[in-house]
Length: 177
Image: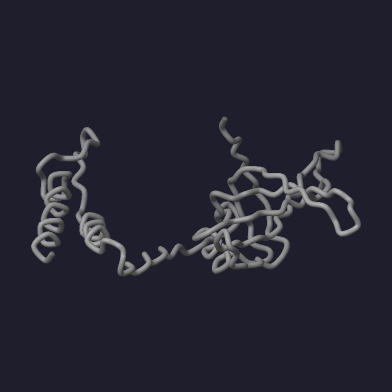
């Protein structure tokens, strides 16, 4: 069974609430969307605003809390989930929540500056050499043939160079061990 992805365009209507839970970090906020409706006289009017609760988890939650503010135009992609609970009075309640997989500023409405999240430092039980290999491979430029658009084999920046850098990093890690 697959989930249906929903894309929501709107404006953040409340401060982002950031919590650390037993299931991981959680950032939640509301997004308001207001449709524009033709009024029949060649103009437009605002329709009724629909408010959607958004939940972002783990590293996305931390990035949302650091980046998103009230009034920001956003695009949110995710899956609709329904939360059900019973009040202390015994009344059943439910609320639909957009479980976000992607949250971004809507660049059709303004500009934004991207800052890459730093990779967490390796823990003692992690294999630090894996991170070293990724760091070295990410820094190797990729050679692309301007005519065909294919990666150039054996060029200074082609796949062979990336594989060579990864091999050297692995070899160095093995020698150190």
